Length: 226
Image (cartoon, rainbow, N blue to C red; front, top):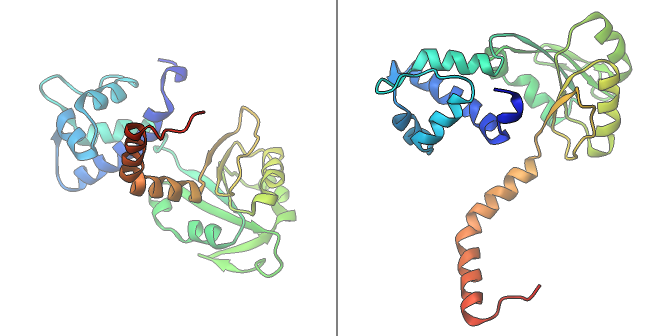
């Protein structure tokens, strides 16, 4: 199956499968059915099977999935059998939080360098890594491998900084800046807009009242004409 046939929704669920399967593996669960996994993840058994079948059949009808085997296959699909070299650009609160999080190392993501433009931050030790000036980025990349760049700079600097990273040969950017980047097709990115997540949360909090109001307006003829 080509990548064009794998939807973004399926791709977003893959890390969830991996996380739940790791938890099951740690709990000593050896086998699980699509129904049981679906109940755990609030998905239907049919959805579980459809998602997993995008990448080949890893289970047996009437038998279910071997937890360790399925976890390994999904880890392979996600590329987690490799280690990744990471740099962080922007040593503010988010950049420091990423650098200090030990969980990334356990997953095979190793922060090797941190860069910033602020004289107040240059030279600071963050989790054993000194912050370097941005003007040393190109020289560092000529001598070291970097698979992923974490971009945690202000929105006003994000696109220019991303352009610098791309020109230096970076092919994957994890963007925490509150702006959508314009990148070449051969550069992959994932945008983490923290305010978007909060907006979704507040929508969910108010969803029931919202639709009650819409239904009431429809009943009373108060629906706005557009």
